[in-house]
Image (cartoon, rainbow, N blue to C red):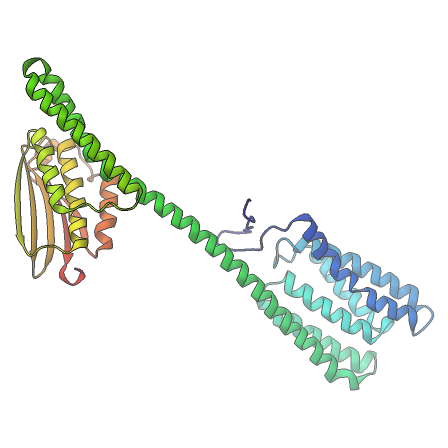
Amino acid sequence: MNPTPQRTDRPGHLTSPALGPRVRLMATWAPVLFLLWPGIALVLEPAVSWAVPVGLTGLTLFGALLALVLHHNMGSPHSARAPSALVVLVVIAIALVPVIGPVWLLTASYVLVAVGVLTLSARWWPVVLGAVLASDALALMYVLDSPDRLPGVLAQIGVFGLLMMAAYRMVRLNEEVIAVRARLVRAAATEERLRIARDMHDVLGQRLSQLSLQSELARRLLRTDPDRADDVLTEVSRVTRQTLGEVRRTLSGYRSPSLHGELETAEALLDGAGITLVREISGDPLSDRLDTCAAWLVREGVTNVVRHSRARTCTIRISSEHTGTSVWVADDGPDQDERPPGPLPWGLGLSGLHERVVAEGGYLEIEPGPPGFVLHAHFPLEER
């Protein structure tokens, strides 16, 4: 089932859901049927002989204009469409008061208040209600000569107007809640897709680099050292199974890498690339959340070292002190003047890593050497 489409007349402005043709037809003509009441009263008790044809003609024209105004505004409230018809509608309503009498005064007041609430913005609602009440008071005192009815009529119209405004606001609030809920669902789905994309990059990026390096090494060793080539291919098979398992756990939402495991993987990956790993770990053990975040940083940093650095040594330094926890992944790649000019690029992996670090209250930096690069994250103590 397709969701009810939302209409927006301008960016950031919520309007009513698009109405179906049957609902729109009923909503347009149902108020027009309300005009039968003063028409029947006019036929049964005409004040003068000419009042019946004049009054019925006026009611017919009023009903046609009312249907026109409702038709143009029903699907797009507060737009004040068909303004000419709206003005003529008010003029006819006033002109029919001396012809039909008090019954029309009440009916026209109800209709005009309802039309005003529908077609005009909320800031005009008190103006509409005040104008209708003032017109009713003047009509009762000077046109119909019925000042004794004044309190009752004003109370009825006033209460109706307030109820109409409150009911319409409740409907609109309910529509906005439904629309906001739909937007939240879409935002959550988008965030989940981004999370999966980020996790897939984190899981597959390093593993595929490792598989590529080991496969190339095995190809070179096949002729010169078949036994070692067999060992390398066995490792390729193991890493492939491990990667498949991590992908499955990631998609199931159960994967949480550990710093110890990532350090072991980093050592194997760097060794396969001919890069020496130097570990410098000091301080207290990390909390579970920081351990996971540090594991992601080590994975992303080591992957970038293997792919891009042309380094001979990679240093992983983890320090947990009274000022907080810091994690560095540094390499001794080419000097700054050998790199392309311009700002350091942030790809999907670093952007995802930045989100993880910020979520734990820390900050992430990429610091150029010389030599090489330093990927550095710091987590203040109070956020641990």
